[in-house]
Structures are given as C-alpha cells and as structure tokens.
Image (cartoon, rainbow, N blue to C red; front, side):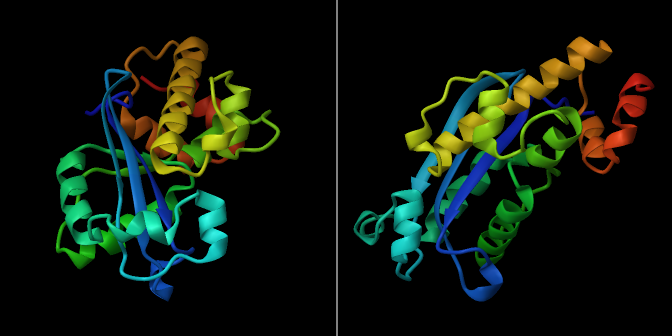
Length: 205
C-alpha cells in the first residue's frame, strides 16, 4: 500500500475553466514528494496554439509573448507523463486540474495509473476551523512561508500545496498516532462527511 508522503503534487494554469469548451493548458508545475521530501520538480510553459485572454494574463502573469516560443502542449505533456510515472496524484481543487490533465493526456494517447486526491477536500475535513480552504488561506493557517505575489504560477502553487499537504499529514500523525499514513486513508477521508472524520481516524488500524 502506497504511503501518502510519496506522490506527485501538480497544478495547471490554463486559458480558461473547461477543456470541454476548448480551453487548453498553458503551464504545468509539479513536485515529487518521496518520504515527505521534495526530491524533484517539473515546470514548463506550453504553447496551446490559441491566444490567452487579457484576464488570464492578468491572473497568471503568463502572456502570449511568453508562450510564443514555448514547446507545444503535446511535447510538454509527454515529458510530464514520464514525470508522473506510476505515482498517486494530488492537486488543490483537483477536479479542475484532473479535467485538464485527462484532456491533455488524451490528446497524446497517454494515461496515468495513480489515484487522484484533492487537498482542498481533505483540508475541509482536517482543518475545519480554517477561515476558508483556499490555498493561500491554508498556507497562512499552517504557518507555511509564502510569497503572495507568486500565487497562480503552477510550480509555486504546487510547492505551497505540498507544504499544506505535509501539514495535514503531520496533523494526523500528531492527533491520531498513525505513523505511516497510507494514501488510501486520505482518499477515504475526502469521501467522508466532516462529522465522521474523527471516528474514521480514531479507528484506523
């Protein structure tokens, strides 16, 4: 059974909200955690072949000029599929990132074998007293060092998600004395009502 401290944490920046509406990825950032330590990073801009709107440029800081000389999405996604390998995956608001990961990999006939967990859903269950469960709020809530000016760039958001993820693992270890936390437990937690989280963790063997 794979442990929750060894996996890939990823984040996409995109041209919009939905690949079903023709939106594409423009940047992928990820960190590889092994035994709770960041051992590798992946970050690339990618040229989607369509223009980025002024809103997206303002939101992400990624301009059409920056993307002009970037590798095509297909080339970047082949490299990223190799980076993922057979690891489990984590993203903050994972439903968004999973849609784009699935859509971009489908275009190049690649796939992944790991399971996907949403760190935001997990935080809603473990950090129920947090003001909200946006990434920036959770970074502050867990006292992780951050630079607000860099939010909404893919690698930075992945690194901040990794800090929040490790804080959640530490919280479980401290409160419930579960030393080696399996990924499957956290997957189950994201499907568990908040009121039942304590019972599940207290009874976990």
